Image (tube, rainbow, N blue to C red; front, side, top):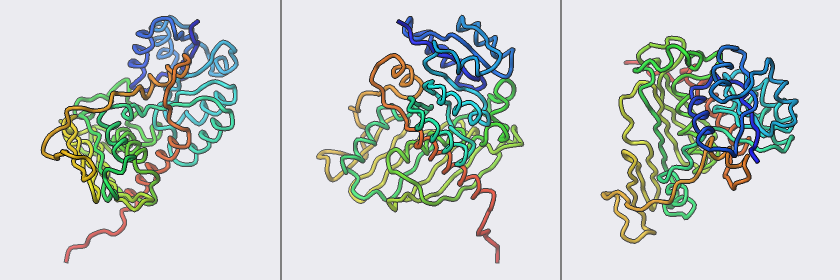
Length: 334
């Protein structure tokens, strides 16, 4: 019997991909209803899903047939949608980032935990084999004491005008909370915090690059410290033509880098490891992100992101943006 879900908001750029993922699954998932504050957008997505359009989200939250909701609204609407969905005992997929900042994100996490419903957000990169390898190597102690870690997540979205029309809200921080750095950087930040734990302090520099989207940043770099003492750096951008080096991990007993999707690794604990040669064997991929939510909804085992994990990413990202705005310790020429 199919699990019945509903879309609550269809604004996010990942919505079409999610619809395709649902359509590929056959008969185990059914979308009954679609709501969006933009009636035309709601009808477009409902037609693709052969679902009904409802006029308010409460029509979905009060529907006993709906087991879970997929919230792909603008980020500034999450706080109005996630808590009532959880209170209605609907399992929740909320697209990343969970919140605009710490206050709304932690409030949503508390509401989800209190309701005891399943939760997932869009950190699909956890499931990729190179990232699984890094996680396993860290957990095994192969890096010794980790001193530095870096993640870079960049594409050419601004160069290609991806956010010019239908997805324009994503370049409006009043609705998205962030620009290009936060949009893509949240993935790299999730990986680093998944691997290394909590962040205690941070600073960042942001720029609007091409200025195609003058109201928001298009790129940035952040520097931060983990509770463990390790130093982290994060790059994210909508202005890059390529992103060849995505991860670097440095420790007292090991080192790793992911270059063009290939993992280079060396550790005192792993005989024969050689940083000059890419690994030929990696762990299998794991279902993550939206697909993991669908698996969880259909009774399959799935590793999901904890609500307070998602909130912590929003909190750190907010602190990075605040630091960038403050522009402290300005360098003065002699």
